[in-house]
Image 1 (cartoon, each protein chain N blue to C red):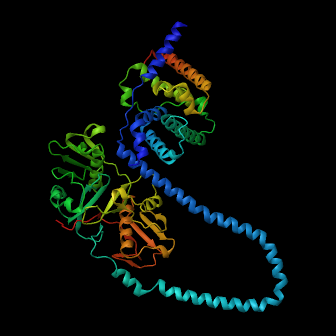
Image 2 (image 1 turned 90 degrees about the vertical axis):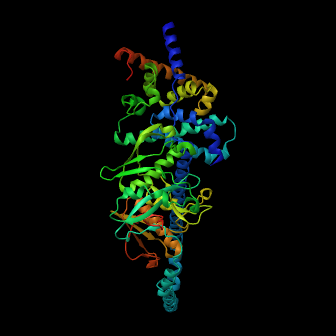
Image 3 (image 1 turned 60 degrees about the horizontal axis):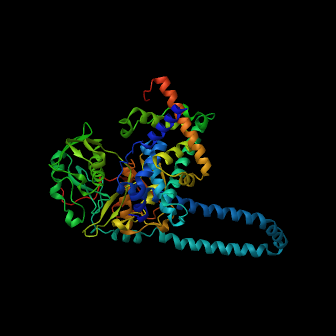
Length: 392
Length: 179
C-alpha cells in the first residue's frame, strides 16, 4: 500500500515536471496567420449567406405557387372566354415593347466608341505592375524588399537580356534599389553575395559579417525566409545554403534554409511616403482555393497601407482546365472599368501564377480589350511583378 | 494588432500552447488549433461575462476546440474503419509523432509518462494536464470542463490509475526503457 502511494506521488510529481514545449512561431507571424484565417472564414460565411437568399427565395416562390395556383387556374378558366382576344393583343404589344427595350440595350454593350475610350482611359503614366510574358529575349532578375512595417514582401522585377549570367546581375541589385523614394524597408541583401545554382535547385548565400536578420525584431527571420522565397522560388530553387551559420532567432543557428512555395495573393500597396504603387504579396493558407483567394483580394488592410486589388462588388465564377484558369464575370454590370480593371487583371494574373496556372481566360467582361490585355484570348501569366524601369 | 489578441498572447500564450500541444502532440495541428482559439476569443470576447477568470474562460475555449478536433478525427477514422471504437481501442494506435526535443532530452520517466498519457481518455488527459501541468484548482478545472467537482476528482483518480497501470506494464515488459 505504502509502495503504491509512493508510486502515485511520484507520478503526480512527474506530471508537474513535464517540460515546456516551446512555440516556434513568433507573435507577429501568429497574428498574421490568424488574420488571414479569419478573413477566409469571413469570406466563406459571406458566401454561404449570399447563397441562402436565392435558395430561400426559390422555396418561398414555390410555396406561393403551390397555394395560389388552384385559385388562379379557377379564376382564369372563368374569365378566359371573354378575354382571350384582348390578352393576345396586349401580349403582342408587350413583346414589341420588350424587343425595342433590348435593342436599346444592345448597342450600349457592344459600343465600339466605348471600347476605344476604355483603352484610352488606361493610365499609361502609371508604373506598370507586371512584366508581361510578351517581353521576348528578356529574362527577369527577381529582387524583393519588405514594406516599411516589415509585414509583407514587395517583389521587384529587373529585366535583363535572356543570355546573361544571372549571378552577375543578382549581386548588383543593391545599386538599383531606391527604397527611400519608394517608401519601403531597406533592401536586406545589399551586401550579400549570391551564387545561384539552378541545376541543383539551390542558391549559396554569403552574408556580410554581423548580418543579423533578427535585429529588427522576431519577425526578421520570417521576413528573411519570405524575401528569399520571393527572389529564388521563380528559379525553382528549393533551399538556400549559407556559407556561415545564421542566427534566425527562435529557429536557432542554421546552415541552410528550405524555401517553401506557400500560396500568396497580390494586393495593392501604396507606401505612405512613397512615389509609386506596388503589388504586394499577402500569404494565404495552402488550403485556399482560387475562389477564396479572390475574396481575400477584395480586403483592404488600412493599417499596412494595403488595399484590395479586386473591387468589392466584382463577382467572378472560377473554374479551370489544366493549367488554364477560367474566370467568368457573373454580371457585366459590375466589371471594373479603365485602370481599375487593368490593375485587377495584373493582380489576378500574378496570383494565378502563384497558384500554378500558366494562362487565365476571362469571359463575359463586356470589353474586348483592357489596357494592354486582349480579353478575347487567354492571357499568359506575367514574368514578374513590379518592374523596375532601370533595366540592366 | 488586435488589443484582445495582444492581451491574451502576452498573459497566457505559453500555457495555452502547452495545453493544446500535450493534448494533440503535433506541432502543426497545435498551431492550427491555437489560431482557432484566438479567433474564437476575438470573436466572442464581448460576451465574456466574467463569471470565471479570464484564463479559465480561455482554457474552456481551448478544450472545446481540441475536443472538436478529436471528434472530427474520430468521424474520419470511423469512415475508414467503421468498427473502430476510439474510446475502447484508441490505445491500439501507436503514437506516430516524433518526440519534440524538449521531451527527447528528458529522463526516462518523463518520456514514458509523455508517451502513456495517450492511453488515458481525452477527459482524463484534460484533467491531468489542467490539474498538474497548469496547476488549476479542482473548481477551476470543473469550470473549464463543465464538470462537477466530484466528476473532476473521479476522472483525475481514474486517469492516474490508468496511467500508472500502463507505466507498470511497461516497466515489467520492457525493463523500464522508454518507448
